[in-house]
Length: 368
Image (cartoon, rainbow, N blue to C red; front, side, top):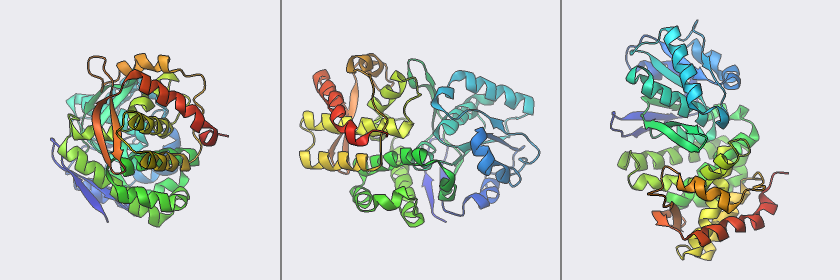
């Protein structure tokens, strides 16, 4: 069973990546030591598919009602966190409890923030059920919720004690949500792994049809990249910023549309294309690599239309991004495939040209 260890300030934890990981969840959680019970946090639709089977296996899970909440970005807010922690109080969760998040990135981010703050911190386990969560959001300890002014502006660094990533659960994922995760896989190829990028160029069809062999190759590889990056820079003071490739503009697109138009990976897809065009505009990237990056992003599938979003509308949102410095927006730009730089200030006219240039790509990347 492929297991990748992640270093963190709170102690190392394992990410178990295997097709048969979920049936072994009870044994894996038992290694964390004694607890007063497992409290499940999930969404209604995810719980219908895989929650009940987990509940009867994990200690204290059977007979206890899960805490369910919406897994859309619009529900990723402080009001949801308050509802969760109040339900934990009512259910009798104490400091020896384990909170287990069963779901995608939204569930993991919200549940992780609840775990970080409830009773000043209780043990937390990720059981990611989406591709984006398995390769990205469940690893690294970032938790948080959105404000109307921007994405993830309230949160904490709170590493889990265990991540159980079973690709088998991806079979029931709606195709659009699955493709949303593939954009994050593309991100890893651009920022740190030329071999992964080349594999995706050759085998995108296999990845999109969820071929088990393809998933068994790409998921541990992405996890290993993130483990290496966050192990070196847990608090995002340097290297970890490369993981934000495509996210600066992507988060702004999500906020500008009130988190209702784009799935997270789709917004990141647009953000990666724009950042690639900016990199060409400031002389950081050659045309050949830029073409390959844009071609690979668009090969994942159709992206939602940008609609009437304007660059001027995004400028205020970008200035309020948590990665901005004194209102200065700092970008992550590719230098070449597999090599990325962070903390790059891009002149606003170049940003505008890149954003407006997305219209030329939208025709072949738009949802039908």
